[in-house]
Image 1: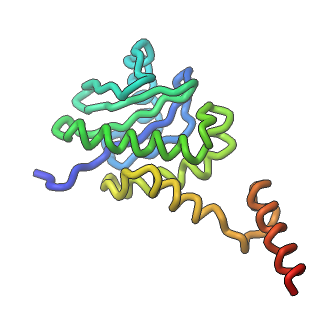
Image 2 (image 1 turned 120 degrees about the vertical axis):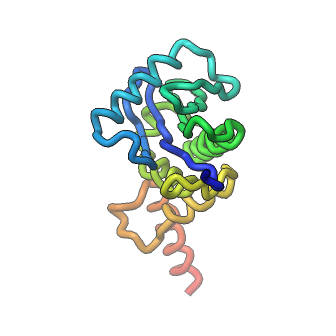
Length: 177
């Protein structure tokens, strides 16, 4: 019996069931087609529910799936059939809230795709190899922000906001000298 709760996958799908960001932490789905089939099946089973105000829980193919929707994004966290639903829901809420913080309240597919790097970093901060690392959205978003705010990166690799912050910092330094 495993002592540490584990996550099988975290999925972020759009309102049509297409991938936005997904991360699998187990070998239960060996091929990419098996993963896509699981995603389609979970989406089809949950799309008619109203999981917009609070997370919903369902049992699917001997997995516990906790999910929540916002605008055109569907968030899913999957665990084994013996996992604690409250822990899975806590992971989901941490991911959901961290994405909301990182996207500054504009949780839609377009904004998510424009900030896909932040969402993928967010997934890495929450779970590593199926082991839960962090569930506090503020801590997750803070770590992701610290990774993405690399002032030493070339301007071509920075976002507009980061480039303006870097330019402002250089201007302030030159004025103070």
